[in-house]
Length: 344
Ligand code: DGY
Image (tube, rainbow, N blue to C red; front, side, top):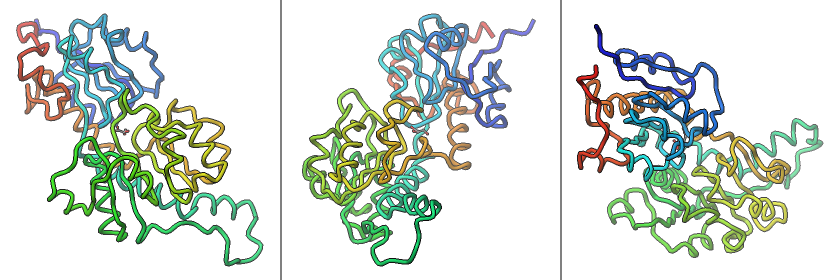
């Protein structure tokens, strides 16, 4: 009799042809419709699973894995993993993986798009025109802020931050300043054309500030009323990281009062709900968390996550060596739950 195959749960509809690769090795429990899974439903779905392919919608921590003694790998389709409680997964010997690199340039493109749209008032202009407000060409219609030659501030200087710096420095001739937990090596700073400054100096100097840092409990509401008050009133703020980094009410107040000129947000504290105070503003561009949403990149992310999942389960060409283990120390230390090959 054939041995049972590992079981994997796919939490959302992804690209069927890519996800189908899992079926060569596993029993796949798919989710045919976009679904909001609460904690109890995730816990129920993970019961009996060996692996899971999930998105940023699904929060997985101690409560969700409590009934999943066989779970070995949680493969997140995304680079950010604040939806995962890594300590809880590690304590249970469960490998967590993410999808860095493949989305770097696409996400940097979106960050730059938001910056251009907000600083040059593109969305506001479009709405104004459609509303029939364009009576006559005027010299002072929709005056915005320049990108070229201005100072670009970047908070968080990982791969995406560096890709934004390159665009600003090489493409738009911007002076690029950054702040990060650790300073980049000099040759990397030079290659991306960026200089390190302290947090307060970054806020004070930037004509445009882009947030690209990972979200942690420590940087919750890092950009609050006090931080916004240190920025230039003519500045643009762009957030493509995670919503919780910005105090959205303070941002809405700053934009409404003219304390800050404009903003572009792709991420929100309470997705998919966007504060009415933000929705009411004209000087903000709002996109629905589409940083990595080009077709090619989203496909690549799913492929990387599928590869990670199979490898973490000890299956496929990279068996046992997932390329993007977040808690890789489990593998190195021999503390990861492993497939019992005798069971299969
Ligand atoms: C990520 O990868 O973290 C994005 O926010 C989701 O595409």
